[in-house]
Length: 322
Ligand code: FES
Image (cartoon, rainbow, N blue to C red; front, side, top):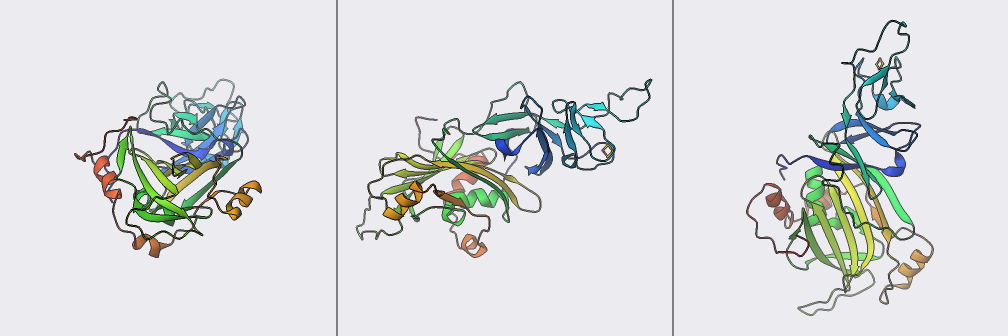
């Protein structure tokens, strides 16, 4: 799968709670090494994870009131502008040269993720292109982060062609039956597939009413993915929101958060309801992805994503959300 040049986008590259005002967090987002941190007021910042002095990773440094201090010689960099604000041992008559500075990136937070704008986004447009604003957790959230041994484009393709290779909903078997074609909704591609409870036999009817739906919503630009488990009436049961971005050497950085909607599900197995009552996670995002399963996937709806990203004339169904 090829990924053409895309417009500048926000990338969800860390869970909000993993970025603090004590220790910077190193991430790789869309191939860029970043050091994320907050000031004492809670504002998040992103600097290139490379000190402009001797190229030591800034993520090895310490957060100070004036910004992020490099751990090697102690230069400090402002989070918003990247400007060097302090160099230890300067004489009283010396000033920090204004050209000294680290590269700073625009940062915005939404849906419990720290988003970094890569490719020319302006800080004055902080919400443009942010992922779903419809993520409204109820009760306990389940979160995580991982780097998976799979290229970003292939990860997104598999999210459409075979999401069961990448994640699982507890007690649910995803089928390979698509409930309609992939459709365009706003800046995303949406695909529904039928699902059943694992203890359930599918009737042999030609037309089957699936009791569950797995809906994958994949942003055309960037790496925002939302996967919803819905009941037959399309009421949400579980929602998972993910940020996926290219890491180095053909790997993909993931961070995610999701929750159970506490929906009443008369057809749910007792084991499923008991697990929810005990607070067990309703889904799992796989850290180890089986290569054989990925290799066996048919390339199907991901062709629509490929085509949409390439800007080809693909006949998408009109949508109210478009
Ligand atoms: S390498 Fe960072 S201050 Fe010298």
